[in-house]
Length: 261
Image (tube, rainbow, N blue to C red; front, side, top):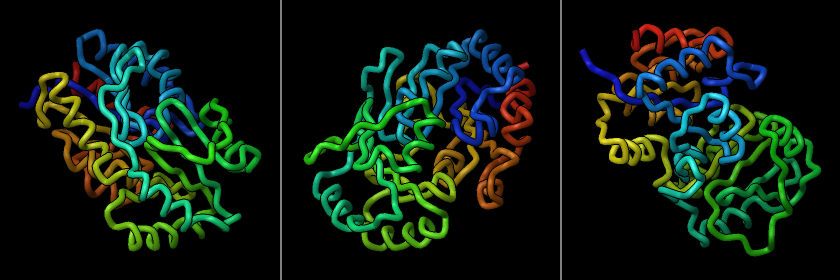
């Protein structure tokens, strides 16, 4: 029987319930494995300061994987690993997306969140969810880890296909129906986990990964034990080795309490 030595987990829709909270049973389960010396490492599309309140709550004292694998920071928020968009791709995307008032566009660089319109309702909603405030994007911005496009799902789904055709060398995926994320193709959750395996002297078979959406797919296909949440789409459930309860019913805790007795 495989002895699992690290746990990697998506945050939204996985670690957090629909109120954007970690339930008490899940907190207890995670703290218990941490006390056993099992690292619990978030792997999220979120920027760093939208992750640290939860790692502080869990007392993980571990690295965090941000922007779906584009940036890994240690517990002191020092970069261990960084993959950014090429400047020519950034400029081409800006040209393609200009004059699209129905789209809200965010740029994430290191610890910072930039946008052209901080008063946009999508930006305000994202700020309420993450507890962060967007800054006005400077005219020349480099070292961008992620672009996030927010809009109604009816716009996001066709835009995803169009951009994937126009920029086949980039990573372009929905993290949920209304959110489209664009990153360097080398920035993936599975690549970030591989980096952390070397950092922690582990192999893929010793890793558990939890996820709930399409940007978790490569991570779930890679991990030794992949667990899809009960609220995940069927495609994600079918790709995982196991399906647990949904994010409102302690899906993570149920697996951790069974695996780490």
